[in-house]
Image 1 (cartoon, rainbow, N blue to C red):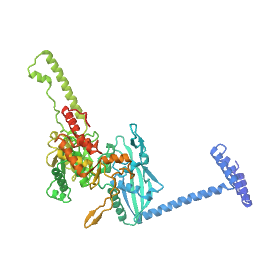
Image 2 (image 1 turned 135 degrees about the vertical axis):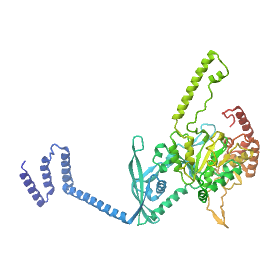
Image 3 (image 1 turned 60 degrees about the vertical axis):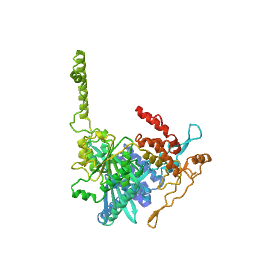
Image 4 (image 1 turned 90 degrees about the horizontal axis):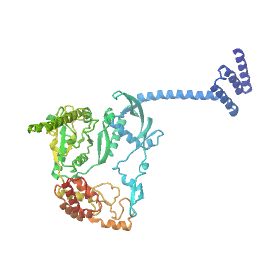
Length: 627
């Protein structure tokens, strides 16, 4: 190909077009001349590009070359601006900004994300991550949500209606948190920059090695001092725990794959329920006072130094024992609520829990908390190398009695083989069984490297079956015995079941439901004493709305109204019908819950229920004849 002729023709044409104002036609001819050189007749992409080039030039009257030149200029300018901006920002960040890094394995990460999700500026951000929020049964909006749910007519007799929660989840909005990237927000008139980044980290501890995601939060602000960020984090932490005020948080060990990451992944929050008042625990008042005084003394800030000066490990252990349903676990929750502590529940029967995991869990406990080991007698704890108890074989017994018959000897020999095989299989199964041994638990409780400052609570139905080493002084400092309900305790339980809700009892009680009250007014101090004024509400008002009841419903409610003095009289009469030490508080409470709106009916049916339960216990039956 003669390139000289080609360039001369093209450049002469371009010069002529530029002078005559026909730049596009010249460029078009040049593109058509260059197309064969680039193999355009065989390349469909170049042919399509040429077609698009001609369409833009002919239809829009624009020179595509100029358009491409401008696009390239803006692209290059954008790159330059980004580079300059990045260099300037890094200069400012390194010299005129302070920052604090927060890893996703720390509790502060959870505090920060929850606070950011509630900020209006963050909620209106253009880059968000949606998270599903599941409300618990203890949420304050529970009653309001019940109003919003649809009711459907029952299939039974009458016009009964029942709550339907099929659309409950649809009404719960998701929670929006900042997505991965850079965000900005304001706090107390100061601008903060949040950088949420995510990275994949190789986890070599897994069976085959896996990658897991880790997140970091970088909070920055202008200034060479990080004090504003520290103040923000302190406020965020206080804000987070305000929601936990008057609530008890229950945590359990996380699944084994999560516990490998350590930190906050060792424990998983399973519940956050309101504190249980101590008065709701059915227990002898002297025992209540003894436990409260002992725990209060142990948690006193001056106690650690007192223990250290005398070389005593800072630990406290309690053993709650008694029949099932007598309130052992309830007392644990009530104590945690009184002192504002979290409860960490550990199941020693968890097959994924090893002795090493148990030590790690104990070492990751906070400074003050309650560790609850329920039903410690059923955990299967035994000493390492302890022989399995087995009765002597039938053959040995019968041989010792002088039975020398041939058939008998043959049978005894076979029986000995079967029992021996059973013992061998049982021993092999026990050797292969994974779990916590008694020595492993003892080392976690009060070993050399065990955690100090926590409160250990163990519950059991059979205290005599426990190993002496587990409950010796130093590991168990106070034992609290629970018994079945006495008549006085039954009276107390009945009165508490039907009394009005709230701090102060109302003059009239409508069944077990207190009249609905308005939000609590602010507390005003008058002469050094707090005073709260409560508004009175008509007893014929629905407990779920402010609309008045229908005439039939009002008449029915009127039948269930009674004075507080009458409630005390009914409760005393109910307690006199309950035999001493025969029923557990849980059994009595179950009977009252089925009649929670009508105490008179409960009193009327008490005698029949007592006789039915007595007959069931005498027959050792598990089927309830009377409920």
